[in-house]
Image (tube, rainbow, N blue to C red; front, side, top):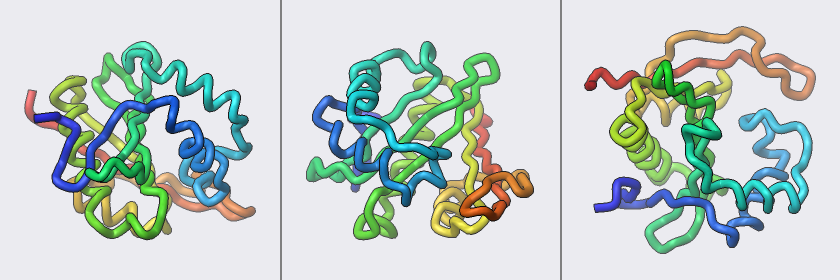
Length: 176
């Protein structure tokens, strides 16, 4: 059974055909707050990123996978980033793009799949995520998936002239 396939979704490597989807996501100001993006990306840069997306996670310290429903429809992206092999930890970022695909359990299944992958295949000890204090859907998602809030970073993110606190969540794998 494919490690990155669940009952509702599966995760796959990026393909050249994902260019339009990724360009739309990266250039949507709706998502800039959660991705720390402040400027649009050119089609050329995204194409170059896709051409290099096959590189080893331990070399580039990140991995982005497409989230697809079982009918092969792409619905979002999951990122493993800031990989620290020595400390055996990495950050996660998840995005389900449209409201019609949110609240259906896709995010929880993705976090379970990617956590299992990181702990089993990448031999990581812990995963973490940063969530702004007002992102209630993400707070609910990470807590549902056993991520623990371990701290608040005060005035961490500046959005539209106002600072927001950010919660640091961790999931520690105690099985070695």
